[in-house]
Image 1 (cartoon, helix red, strand yellow):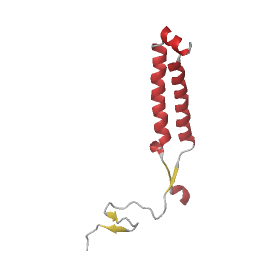
Image 2 (cartoon, rainbow, N blue to C red):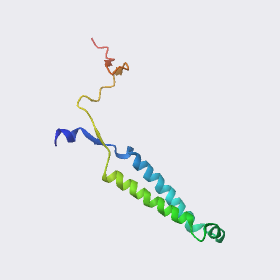
Image 3 (tube, rainbow, N blue to C red):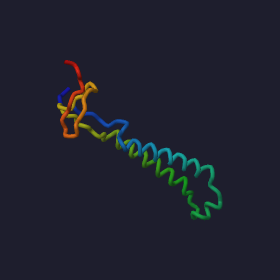
Image 4 (tube, one colour):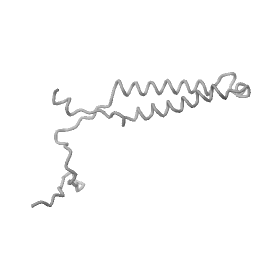
Length: 106
C-alpha cells in the first residue's frame, strides 16, 4: 500500500449525505404508508385526484436512494498529515498551535 493511501480515510457513517438519505427515507416510507392507507375521497377532491402523500413519499425515497448511493460511490476523503499523530491524551494546546505536554515525569 502506498504512503498516500495510508494517510487517506473516509468520513464513513459521519458523512452528512448518509444522515440526509436516512431521514428522507424514513419520511418517505411514512408518507407512502399514509398515502396507501389514508387516501379518502375528500383528499382526492382537494388535490385534484392525485394522492399527494403517496407521490411525495415515492419522491423522497428516490431522493434518499440517490443520497446514499452518492455517499457510497464518492466518499469524502480525509487526508491526514504525517505531522498529525494521535497523542497519549496528556497534551494540551495553548491556542497558538503549539502543544504542551502535561507529563510530569522527571
